[in-house]
Length: 100
Length: 147
Image (cartoon, rainbow over all chains, first blue to last red):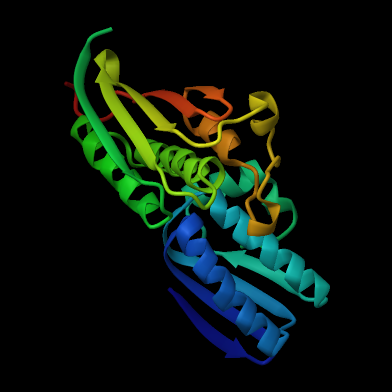
């Protein structure tokens, strides 16, 4: 569900499948474990292989945004589909995190 | 308005069934040959409503979620999602964007905002102690195959 790539102070988390309330809970644990173990300066969330996302994905990003903020790091979101962009725009998260 | 086709579904209010619920609704609607983005909108709205029932209505208690989908004339899709959970005390407050009662579970408080913006019509009926029903409608564009 998540493929991690470590490169110096960066973590790229390649997310796979569908992000709903059920899967977000599992992804959240895995992401937090990796962040807390590595304290990266940059967390890149790659949505290329996400086939569905509802507002649970917004909660997932917001939570990681807060955590990275506490660690003085930043979060970058990339490869979002038009549907995912639509939800992100509605939530205003596009103003908090950098979306590539 | 005439009902051209209809389906009813009930399932346990467990988070594992969120993907099943949206897959089932979208398989039923595929007969209208909707545009990819319209189908994605419906899938997302259904996911939000079902998640509300599971997370908020039943909390950690067991219960059932009921879905009715009707295909009406003129490519109108009508969806009702019902639970017999705790009910909503103040519907207008619950519908405010970013309002949530499950903050520590990282709920963004956007469920109703997504349903409202992805569907054409949304209405909510609720009675504390008895449950909640969400009604949604969307008219599909005529880009797909006609009836």
